[in-house]
Image (tube, rainbow, N blue to C red; front, side, top):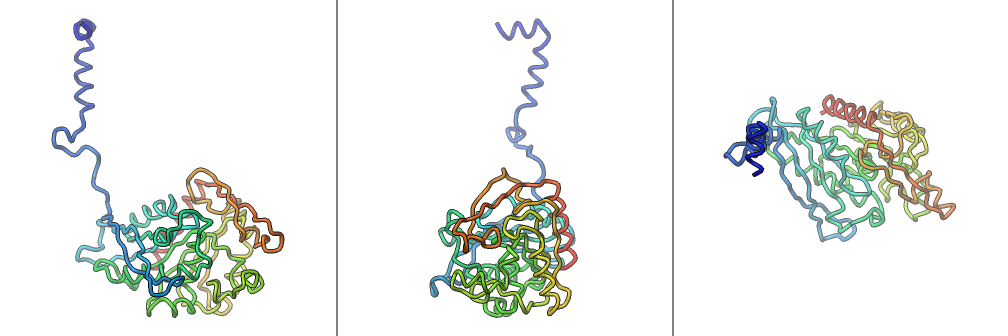
Length: 322
């Protein structure tokens, strides 16, 4: 009855065409979901020393993305690469956001998960000190250097928050000597890496440590260029001033290798393009917790325009330096 009605109204032909158009191309054995991705993506793993439990190495897992177009790889010139390091909340949208643009520029990426190997499921469980994860970054560098299509002498590192601490730490000769096995990164980008904490002897005394032991000594650098990016409303540093002061101090004794870019009005994690969140952290507000006993709040407010500006700047930095 319904079909007769459609015929009488002239809609039968339209329905037939619409129905055919809705049939997926794969039903006829054809590809109907666009071209293949421009990268070869694989999920990899490698071993990393476990400083918290010597003799029981960690198995670090990661996502390796290698561009397959252009003049690189597949028997041609080897690719540069960037190791991407997450923040305290673990792997999130930031890694893929930068990975996509870096891959499009002909740069391979390796996002690693420092938390999964340690059984960490929340920021409150993060390691007791950044230095405990420095071997992960250097182990990722060694892994990339062994890949046939990657140029191990042209590997950079990009980190967010906790990962930003690691990115800065791997630029310090002390830690490169301890964990690098003769390898160093060629360029470093650190996003909002809690700049006030570096070389801060008074702060570290509160946790019964020293900058060198905790992983925040930054005195003698490897010489690789370093880009620090921070928001002027970051709730750890409270402004861009601590990062600018850290850069000046480092450049005074290491040459002009450190630059800082500040994003006006941006909070911590402005390039985390996910719903806004607010967390607490004892190291926020320049470590006020250690004198007040109250953990300050940290706002993660996405800023789409400045996130894309940041991504463009990061890609340009690595394209020029690697």
